[in-house]
Image (cartoon, rainbow, N blue to C red):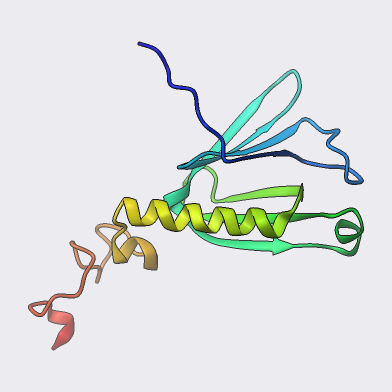
Length: 140
């Protein structure tokens, strides 16, 4: 069984003084975002895009001087609820690209209302199908 090569929509590295001289890499595919850190001991983290809840852009004075910024990804992922893309080039464009991909993945997976609003299956008061129905008790 051959593995398919992943096509990346965006790639970058964490930068110091605007230069990509670190061992932290970021990649965005159609359905996941990856962070790989380390030289000898590699650690790779990934977040499924449909789990992303919020995106945040941070740019300090020094980041603006060197043309970089940090995009913070907040997700409902259990192992990686917060993933920072530190000191990346063109952070505003990357944030917008991420936003478009996240929305596309949520639409393609037909995300339920409870997942978008933070409810979990089995949570008290959450409708099992995720939608308000005319026969739901909550309408009375």
